[in-house]
Image (cartoon, rainbow, N blue to C red; front, side):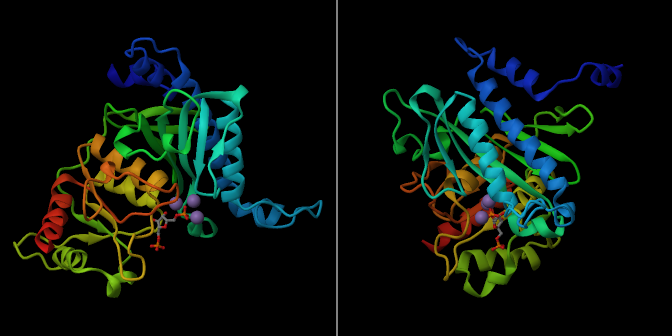
Length: 335
Ligand code: AHG
Ligand code: MN
Ligand code: MN
Ligand code: MN
């Protein structure tokens, strides 16, 4: 019985990645070790997030604890956990985090061949009301020689891997190492991520659009036109539904599984949108393309962008292939 076999032959994320990497000649397990450290960080954040509601009571985050020490906010705490886990993996040279203004250069004795860009806790405005939040990351390989900031200022298409962990009704880890997208669910009793969503493919066209419509008065014409078409389709197709959590990880996760489009467009107040290229736009665009969807900035394929600063922002439209085609056509008509 296939179901029985799955129940007794557990495909953990470590086993899955070891299998995948063994196909690469000369692989020595470095990537698996790095990923295990990222997974450890995610398990820690998951457990901290689950306790966040109790934190006020027992003095966990953003409050003073019983010893009278100032407690760390969850995003700051998560950042420290990831930085320490990544450095101690011995497999990284440069780390870029949303929470740190400057990149971290790992000391020579602990250096390895990877760079990790990450948003330790995305959607932090949702923490206090118990809505889904997540961690996003992307992985590059350093070029030979002394690591420099240019090792991370590379287009997203050069990423070796990208993924996110969503702390939702269950804790899910979604990963691509460049050959499709796979989803793993944390079994809390085992403390292991188990493959539950093999080879995720985004539906070709979706029924949902996801955007902060509160910014509508400042949108440019193509974005405004696109959203108008979602509500009042000209071709007789049914109107799309609006879903917007305000946590990129949750909004992108839903888009990946159900189809549709997620956007954080440019507007008059923020000509580059809000989301950060290295650790928000690139990893999610990488996953979308790997799942058969598209990611577009309003000007070009998102993964072709070459960032010049580590915290650079870009407008982003990503999701189902056909839905992104539509917004691309509107921007092309504007030219
Ligand atoms: P972060 O919590 O890491 O600073 O990022 C928040 C981001 C992202 O999760 C979400 O898509 C977006 O902010 C929502 O922004 P608006 O509140 O402007 O819609
Ligand atoms: Mn974020
Ligand atoms: Mn964040
Ligand atoms: Mn933030």
